[in-house]
Length: 286
Image (cartoon, rainbow, N blue to C red):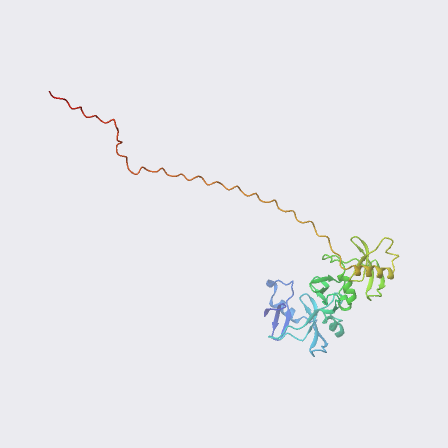
């Protein structure tokens, strides 16, 4: 019977289970092909017991490559702890000690003394990296996940963040340990020329300082001066140009209201005209 599980499609026949290969199309899965898959030997093997939990640690073949797992997946239970093998490791020769090292990842490297934030080494989708708060830096190899120190991590975080696919340039010189901070000092090439750094503070080389001639004492003095000066402040940008004030549209004069002609309340009676017909003068009779 073909089923779809948490880790992809698989075949089940009684107690036997086997993952369906990713390159096998559904319409190519026949009874004969299913029997071949179930009959194929499994590369899964138990390496030993986890000293912390007492559960078995096994190396398994996964959809995205071999991995180690502590215990088995139980319905309704928590997801087992897992860790992918490094590209340099072989599942056939993996030891219990190597598996326990892998299960330490993500590994807490230490704490940044300046910020109090934890530095953690992760093996991510795009490769190994360090994380401090929301800041990240890529590591050059998977082996560094198990060996990188706090000092090395701080030196990486002191460098500008590289775009994905680019690797940080190697130091031009390693000068030794700063006697005042006990941090390693290296010389690096920066955007504005060479500089020395102890991982937390950077100081540009001065006139007369050479990459090949500078020593640990001179580098320590430059870094001490830089720390004493405090964090650099950038000049504020010129104030943004003010948008020209919008001219107020002239208020349109409301048209004068036409007052309706007053109607004559009533027709005037005929004007009394003096020019009426005069009465005839009385005639004298003799």
